[in-house]
Image (cartoon, rainbow, N blue to C red; front, side, top):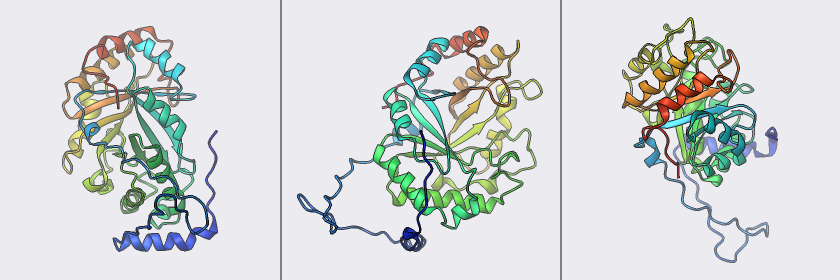
Amino acid sequence: MRTRHLLIGSVMSAVAVLEFAIAQNITFHAAPAGPGKSSASGAAAPAPLPPVYDIKPLLRPKGKFLGVSLGGDPTAVDNVKAYAQRIGKQPNMLTIFESFDDQFAASQVRTAYQQGALPVVRWEPFNAKLADIAAGKHDAYITAFAKEIRRVNVPVAMTFAHEMNGNWYPWGAKKVKPGVYVAAWRHLHQLFEAADARNVIWTWTPNVINPVPSVKLKPLYPGDKYVDWIGIDGYYTHRGKHTYAELFGPTKRAVRRFTDKPFLIVETGGEPGSERPGWIRDLARGVARDDDMLGFVYFNQNGSARWKIDADSAAQQAMRDRVDNKTFGFTVR
C-alpha cells in the first residue's frame, strides 16, 4: 500500500543549498568512509551502489515494445499472464500510475522487470503545482524518489504531467503556462541527475493534437537535453480518427519540426463495438511499419470508455493476429 511522503522542516536549509548548487553547476562529493569505517554518527557507511543501469541499448531497440496498462496490481504476475494468454504474447512494457506525493513503487517496478518488461511510471502531479515544483518547494520529496529509483537500478520509462497540451488536467495548457511546465520538467531532470538516477528514460508525452489543434507543442517541449522519447496518447473512438495515419500522423509531424527523438504510443485503446478489431489491427500494422515508432501500450482498463478487451474475443483475436511475429516483444534485460 502506498504511503504519502511527508515534507519535514528540518531539511529546508539543505534543500536551499542543493538548489543553489544546481543553479551554479556545483557538485558536492562526500568522502567515503572506507572499508570498515563508520560515519560521524557511528552508523556503518551504506554499501556502495552497483554501476547505474545503462539505458542506451533500450533507447532505440531492434524490436517493438508491446505494452499494456492493467487495472488492479498492474505488474502482478497472474494479471500479466492472463492478459498474455488473451493476446497470445507476453507484454514487455507495463504501466504503473503514481501520484506525485506517492513513494516510488519499487516493488511493482522490480516485478515488471523480473518479467522481462520495461516499467512505465506515469507520474501525475495532482497534488502539487508545477510552479512550486520549478521553484524547488518539493525538492526533498523529488530527491528521495529519485534516489529510490537509483537504488532499485532497473530501467524505468518516466512520463511526468502527461497530456499537458490538453485542458482536462490541472497541469493542462489552459491552467499552466508553457514556460512553467518546461521549468518544472527541467528541474526534475536536474534533481534526478544529482541523485545519479540515470536509469530513467524521460518520456515527454502530449495528447494527440487532433482535439486541441490550437495548442502549440514546441513551447511545451523541455529540450533534447531533457527528453529521451516522445510519447503520444491517443485513442480510437467512434467520433474521432479511425486510422493510424489520421490519429497519430498530425502529432508526429508537429513534433518533427523541433526534435528527431523516437516516438512511443504510451496510451491507446479502442471503444467497444464492431469497429474495434479493425482498429487494433490498424494500430499494430501502423506501428510495425513505422520506423519512427518504438511500440505501443494498450490501455486495458475502463475509464472514459470501456477500453478493456478481456470480454471481447474479436478484439483479442485481432491483437493475436498482428503481434504474433518477431516485430513485437523482446525481453528487457
